[in-house]
Length: 432
Image (cartoon, rainbow, N blue to C red; front, side, top):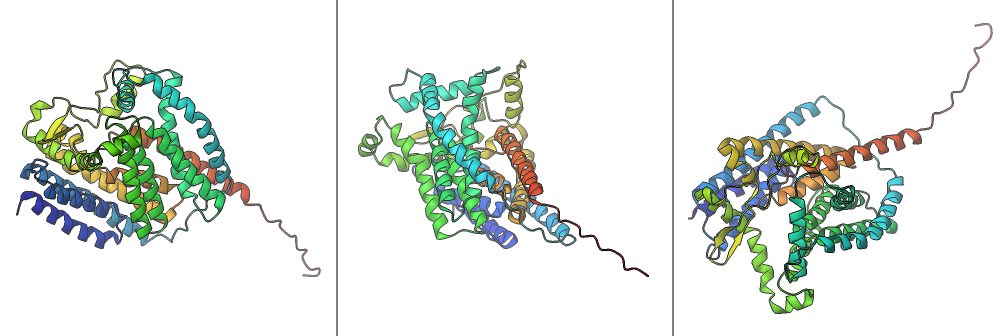
């Protein structure tokens, strides 16, 4: 039995334990260990196409999963003790006024979309004959630019984030009303369009996987409908951009030239990062620049005008097999290079603790907490590809500010809807 097989069995046992503890696949440690069980299983199947994983990397993957589970179990234990001395909390209600704001937002985003496309075309790298490679190159170059940016650039950088948050809000408000469904679907499509135009798979994933997480939490579990929606979402994340980058600016033309590129790219972004991280462990000198959890702080300081340099998150490529290379290295690439085994244990445990806290709050209160859970669900699903909890702190800060704004508006709406009842005066009887 190979090392990957042993690791997959260990992760599968952890998944069983986490499912018993959390009683749901939506429980973050259960989802996390399930994802990594699948990743190791797929890497085992395609050992011939990708380098076989060593005991070093598989050990890190298993220890990280255990730490994630332990952090989540600790939060679960503390939460249950508190629940014993606290009355049940009823889910919060959502104001109908937000439905109208979402509809207005859809109209505004549709108006901005062609303006945004012109902006993307203006920053595309002209050295590429393929438009979509040029767009991706230009977006990456602009994101790596140090120093302050203009207000126009600030607007274009954040409109994609706003579109994602509005789309997830619409899924939270999704109901049986026809208007609600139209707005929700419209915002999901528009949010995907904004992120698609940047040539980013991860942005589209945040929309679709985030929406899937919100929907599953609302329905308290995984159903066949969710599985189908997830499969379609994964296809939409990879297929269009992959085919457009395959050498033709025509989606249909690229598809007819080589359909196998879809399967190869899917494996490159699932099995590839595991093999790339393993290759880094055995030859760290080949990648002097790595990911760092200090990136969001350096990035923010640079944007505010301080004389600091935020290193690019787009690091060098590493061969992962006889036929391919990648520059993504799993979430552990942000923990292990700077902090070693202690970083893997404590940072992953911290993420497990935080995501379980968020899961329990979202399960109890629902409402706009579901938006934050949807973002966490997305990052857990992509943990074999990227690190989105510490390095993605910028998105979390914006999402947190957006969440607080919605909660404040919700409380104001609830307070204004509570009309005080008139007090009827009763005269005392004479002769008491």
